[in-house]
Image (cartoon, rainbow, N blue to C red; front, top):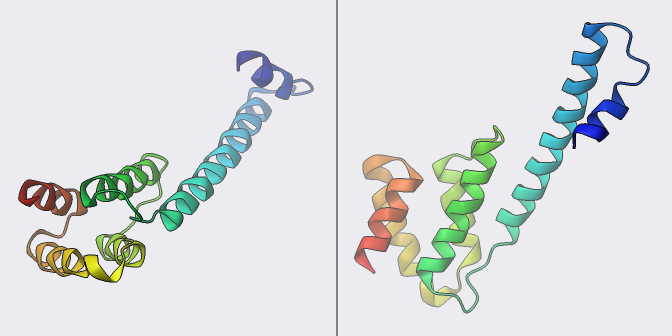
Length: 117
C-alpha cells in the first residue's frame, strides 16, 4: 500500500498537493466502500438462514456503513429487514416495529430479538 501511495504523489511539489492527492484517493475508496456495503445490505435476504443469522447479517452491513461514515437510520434498517423476509416471517417484522418504538436503536432491537429466540 505504501508503494501505491508514493506513486500517487509523484509530481506533487508541495505538502498541500500531497494532502489533496491523499484526500482524493481515500475519498474515492470510501465512496466505493459505501456503494459496496449498501449493495450488500440491499441484497441481504433471509432465504434459508435462521432469523438470528439474517439479523446479524443486516446488523453487520449497517455497522460497516457506519464505520465508513454512512449512517443508516433505524427506520431504513427495519425497511431492509422487511424487504428481506418471506411472508411466513412477517411476525418478526412486527416485533421489530414494537421494539424500535421503545428504544430507537437497531443494535438494541437486534439484541432484544436475539434474546427472545
